[in-house]
Image 1 (cartoon, helix red, strand yellow):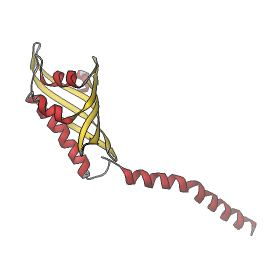
Image 2 (cartoon, rainbow, N blue to C red; image 1 turned 60 degrees about the vertical axis):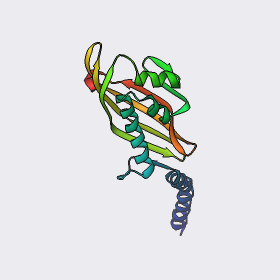
Image 3 (tube, rainbow, N blue to C red; image 1 turned 120 degrees about the horizontal axis):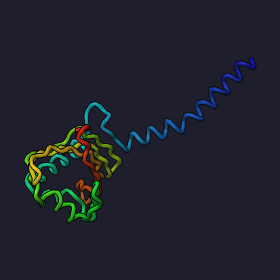
Image 4 (cartoon, rainbow, N blue to C red; image 1 turned 90 degrees about the vertical axis):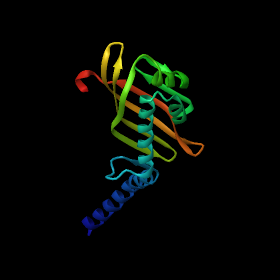
Amino acid sequence: MTNRLLSARWLVLFALASAPASILFAQQGAHSSDSSTAVPTATQKTLYALENRWAEGVVHRDAATVRRLVAPKWIYSDESGTMNREQGIASFTSGTDTVTSAGNDGMHAIVYGNTAVVTGILWMKGHGAQGPFDHRYRYTDTWMKLGGRWQCIASQDYLLPAAAQ
């Protein structure tokens, strides 16, 4: 009888100890989504489309498209430093390099209510003062739903070394 009582007591303690963890995971699942699921959610598909629209905006040097995608206080950082909204937009849509094609690979989105983080690889091909280029950048973009639409509020990327490209 004593062993049964101890077993029952341990079972109750285990159930009580694991309850907060199961509640936490249930709440997290209700409020967030990530791209580890087999089928992307509608929000993830929207974010991926926005990332692709951004790449198209760079190819077409379309500052208006990029401006629509980034929030008024957007900040951008890369290996050269940080830039405010207008500096970042200019760096993507002007300059001596001509981007002839661009796109995204391996995008993943984690959504937390009205905020999301998208990671991926941006590839760009084109030509510049040094000749043709084929660059790949690892990026992290943070998006927030502002005024009823998704806008990027912060971006960070870095050029992948040639060996990783």
